[in-house]
Length: 188
Image (tube, rainbow, N blue to C red):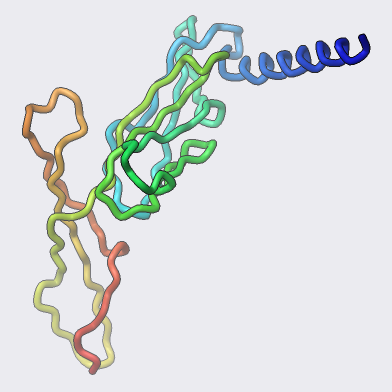
């Protein structure tokens, strides 16, 4: 009898804790119930080694909104056949870290609610440049001086945005200077 009473009390304690934790997200400051979540930014392009902070905004039954980034459960989804499932990780605070050079696509999700039944997500893509342009193009400099080179990557990717025409591509550029390993061909 004592064991069954302890068991019931243990179950009740766990349920109470679960309800208390869930209410932090499931209700706003005035008791209104959470009805939706929006994850931003949407459709993100990243380079290998990048980080991206995502934000979760909760909308409640009284139309109020609240930043619930640190209160939701974050997850990442990659293609099932992709062999390195730890190539992309997301923290409890919504910070995505890429440990893979690409190319790769996936999704980020934020979930809340008593049954984790309120959620939103967005797509991301780890891209590699189609070409890299180094500037200045034909550098010259005096002995004992230094010159900062810049690398600009050009990317052509199938768009992540919805409503894009079939076969459409996005072309964009990004400074990749810090992503490259630089070696001089002249030892002088």
